[in-house]
Image (cartoon, rainbow, N blue to C red; front, side):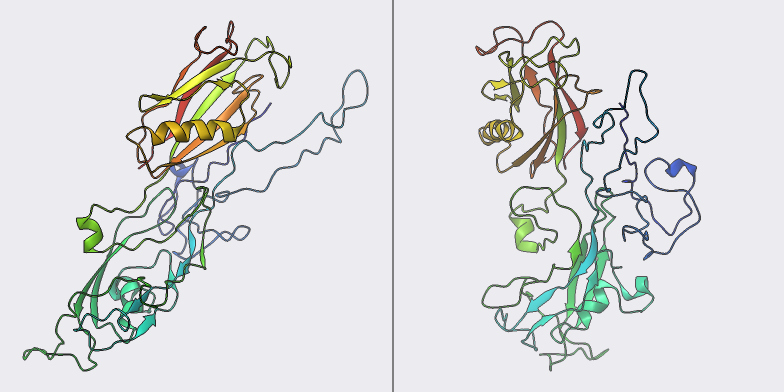
Length: 369
């Protein structure tokens, strides 16, 4: 059994030379342009060549043989353990509605939307060299925006996303209420309506051209806009998911129901998981991914880590979980979750005990934020 990991998911500034320490995770070679992409995938060269959900490999077994006959048709197979997630790409449009959300100060009351803004747009005209691609230039092109200052935070190296902070300094001259005597600049636009606020009939921001994978069950937003009111109410952008893996294994191949190598249809073992001090109900060793997800969701809902969303994928790996299963667990909207623990000692559950070397372990994959 060979396990292949495509190690291309480390973000590195593409405009800097890529040296050997960038491997694994990225690539080796001379600097690239900020907008350069890989030919096959179209993803930014800030990532390695095989980032994202890589197409399945094929097994060409024509050259394989056995000592006792024809090579079996299923003797060589390829299975996906964990699907890759495409990084963020594309662009979006921001909309500012001063017509339906008038504050009585802005001089131009229209519902206006920007041209497409790249997902990695520079903050200011200085940063873009005045080519019109920056967040500042896109916003100042709107009829209801005067002068703004924009700063951009560091890249989120887990997905390629950015955060921009926008300060509305001066109103558009529509005409504006006042101009200063020194420079003839307009007054502040007052308490500007929240960008992307579609209340009252305004246009929603357009994120249809933002690309990138999202595995979160239910609603998944690639764009969040927060204002001073949000921050005063302790609202923050959602962070990355917590990822852990539960390993259920039978390394001595004693056998149990649904075993990948040694199956005993009437033999079951049960265990419990606990998160933040709250235990699940007993679960069979071969529980479906949906069942494990439901149990963990119930435990999280009963803990201090409420308002979280759980996703579970069950896969087989003879190397990592012999005769058993791997359960890849993603917990969204919860920040850094304490390690999940497993209980499988004899007598833990009434539906069957783990015997000899059979066990359940839990490993951390990535901390949430």
